[in-house]
Length: 303
Image 1 (cartoon, rainbow, N blue to C red):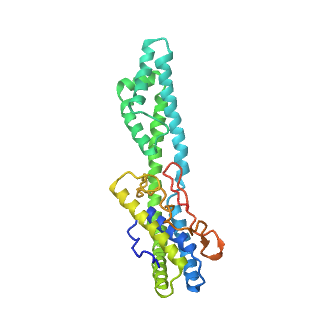
Image 2 (cartoon, helix red, strand yellow; image 1 turned 60 degrees about the vertical axis):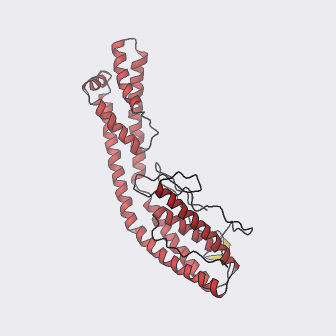
Image 3 (cartoon, rainbow, N blue to C red; image 1 turned 180 degrees about the vertical axis):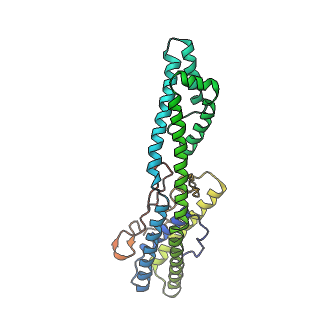
């Protein structure tokens, strides 16, 4: 009979910890057993995971997110208009003196490969660099000649505003991560250790095939999450389903691509629709998962 791995998860970064706890919640949710103590502990563990899930998802969102997106659209429009006006001056006016104004301004956009589809941090940095160029006397005169001085000032001011709101968002997320998430994680981890100890004791005294099967699946989940974490810390390139990640501007550790949906170990009785841990007769257990805020990296926690 297989037992659950008793390795510690306390050192896991948040994203990987979430993945491990979600996998555990799903696997024990699929256990079919009449043991009252198991059913009771499983329901408690599921509630602890639900609490942690809620706190974790809240920590990954911010009221500032929508604001950042709206500001970025305005800023992108400023940049788009400036670049295209410069292109029209450079290409469509039948006067070399006018053309040269447009070419010089257009060249700045080309030099920095400016694109409105870029990630916020990258676009912010490019705009800052471009503003240094536009402050040069010749280019400042070009902007004035084309009537773009005020638009460029708005372009710069909106970028500064975006950076300020992003900093505010990071501070909000940091406060949540050290508060609500910390409390929920500590409670969940205590319940997790208790549940593992109980399940392995059952396997010693009165082994059950359903528990053994859940342990087999979870141990494989855990192994893959450990592998993904190790690869992310080495900075290696990992294909989807095998770890890796992109990180974020909030300082969040790089996340696994989808560590809660690893391939199941070979077993013809693979539980694809786990039982609800709060009601063994009602299919549909496991955590709720959650998404990420717009503009940042997505996190697919479904199983």
